Length: 351
Ligand SMILES: NC(=O)C1=CN([C@@H]2O[C@H](COP(=O)(O)OP(=O)(O)OC[C@H]3O[C@@H](n4cnc5c(N)ncnc54)[C@H](OP(=O)(O)O)[C@@H]3O)[C@@H](O)[C@H]2O)C=CC1
Ligand SMILES: O=C(CO)COP(=O)(O)O
Ligand SMILES: [Zn+2]
Image (cartoon, rainbow, N blue to C red; front, side, top):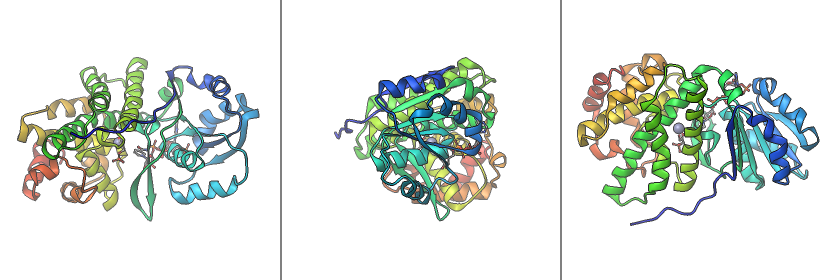
């Protein structure tokens, strides 16, 4: 048996309708007074500007993030060389938070995560997803030290991103199934705590999936789930609890340049297919429940909705095994060929 390592996790998390109003107080309590604020053009107008006004004396500089890339991080590092920064604050979507996480890790200062959309568990995770030369890559970074998830801001954000966040959370179900499979078949290190943190909110969400994801209670459950999912990655020391074959499939779509689905939309569809395969080969799971849950919040469940053809889905499923070959999943275990994958795509109604 192998054990996972002891992890660094966020030291302050607030998920509430007024979390944005806690910024000044939390910074003061943490002894932070020289932050660099990263935001997006839209997120700054919607949320960043007001927050900045409240902490004006503690903001050294404001930068707008254009792309999620190392080039962007380097540009920022050069423009803030020799300043006395004690923290990095990100107010925005995944792109802003990812650049902020990498920058804070490089500068070895705490990162304050203030999401303005909740489209994936990157709001809390120690992972940054960058694109270099159009190729996706997942980087390991320090997790945010402080997370302020304001439900008033998130409730008004575009519903497509919330539905994507739902997909990313639901995908933990197949990710954890794959992790258990690998533990049993390859002896991979497994953490019951991390697995439970990732999968329990996903199961809870499936059972109580409401048609209205903007309903405050449902939204709160979703955001709590995404934060726990991010923390589970820190505890596991890798994205294992939240990223299995359904994520390999999504990374394959990105790698091959197929379609225009959001990350959470792609992994949601991937989860339907992987749950079907787990059910077929091992009798565990309920792929129809996964699909019903996604449908109930109006998240995509078909290839057409994310702009890919049936052939592209099958190509991506075949290519998925080239992604992170060491991460053992149902795809490696059953060694599925084209015909088998085509059948899974048809049976689940994905295409
Ligand atoms: N770290 C991780 O684990 C993961 C990271 N990713 C990465 O995250 C990025 C995608 O993140 P995602 O959050 O989907 O999207 P983006 O960060 O790309 O933001 C989506 C869009 O919504 C706008 N926006 C932000 N907040 C609001 C709001 N409250 N109301 C209206 N519009 C708003 C943004 O504008 P503006 O930027 O101008 O503010 C932007 O145009 C990609 O780079 C992807 O690779 C994906 C999966 C996992
Ligand atoms: O998206 C993630 C978890 O939801 C991160 O996983 P990856 O390590 O596969 O990028
Ligand atoms: Zn994900």
